[in-house]
Length: 182
Image (cartoon, rainbow, N blue to C red):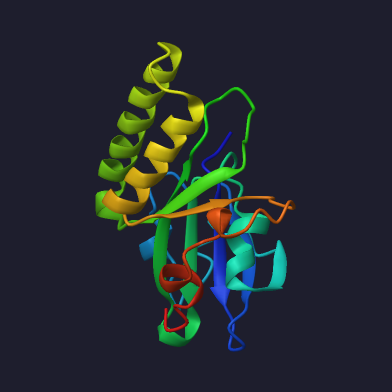
């Protein structure tokens, strides 16, 4: 099964090369394991490219499936391989509807368990409220998204969105796309 992670290495042209890690999503350990001396974390990151020359906004919408990936790492080689780790949160319930709605929450490895527990507690409680008929799925997801954004400073996105539904499914530009210094 694994704990899948997407690892994005920033290039000098501000595009990203994407790689895969089968166990990198388990505890965010790649955040400290990826270094200038060991950019593939002793084999924890697959050396084969999943994609190259990917713009930052497309990482979320075209490659980071919240049903598949548990973590995202952004690696900045020019900054001594500084790594920013994100916990990926799937914002749907397990019945197959709208499976591509997700969020990322920036997280240090030391805080990862707290972030996972916080997210699962909110999602489980909302799932119970849906099952009891207290909330609709739409209301529960809206509340979950607001908690992710407000409490976790997360970024909500829709993976695989070909419908062009607009800004409601796009990352916030001030927190994600416009942050070229990271």
